[in-house]
Length: 307
Image 1 (cartoon, one colour):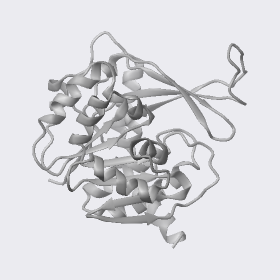
Image 2: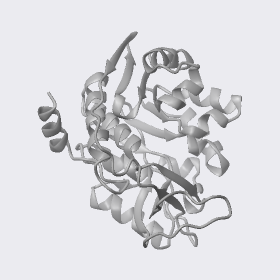
Image 3: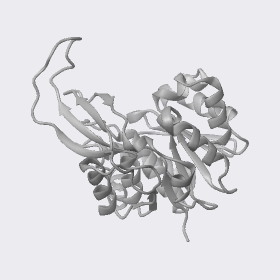
């Protein structure tokens, strides 16, 4: 059986509101009706599934309409939901304020997706070769302790892929150290990686990242249209990006991560997987909605056009 992509993080519903600008504190702006999309961990899983990967969501989902929306979006792409539903509580939402510049600002609620356990995570049954994805946002609140306990007991050969998020730098040193000791793949953006290493340049940052990880770990540092840097087996590769005129950057980093891990699960080397991830992120920013990652054949065409 081919390696699978297993995501442990929160699947939410993004409530996206187009705003002319952010309101001042205490102020108000007028906006058209919002749109609702399955988001959070869904973005990465759908991006991975569209590359042909076998994907599993091990996080929790609720029993209300938002949980139904999340599960329907995953099922439509063939993604398995392994954990049992959380009774009497719906999945949370993330309010996304999207400006004309394509920049976005978030307010995230917490609900059923925060009720995980070692037992619920273990329903995904990870094995050697599988890629288990972790979000830094899961290292807070009620998800932190069961997640770390479960990660510590994973079978040998499971890749633990950390997407740190902006919150990782704000965590207690002990929690960060515990997570980094379990991480075999770091994939963060330039700001998140600079917060870890003190290096603003992504080529220097990616080499410094592996110094915080176990021996043999891989690091990827992405910088949007500038591309990404990859450090594997002691060598760093700087990969150009594919600048586009963005209409919606929400989910671009998730698309990059989803394409990256799916390509690796399919047997591709990390550098080529990252190259395709750059293309996937570039295509995504030209599309509205968070979970609008391209299919593998669309990436093929894009790369052929940009050869």
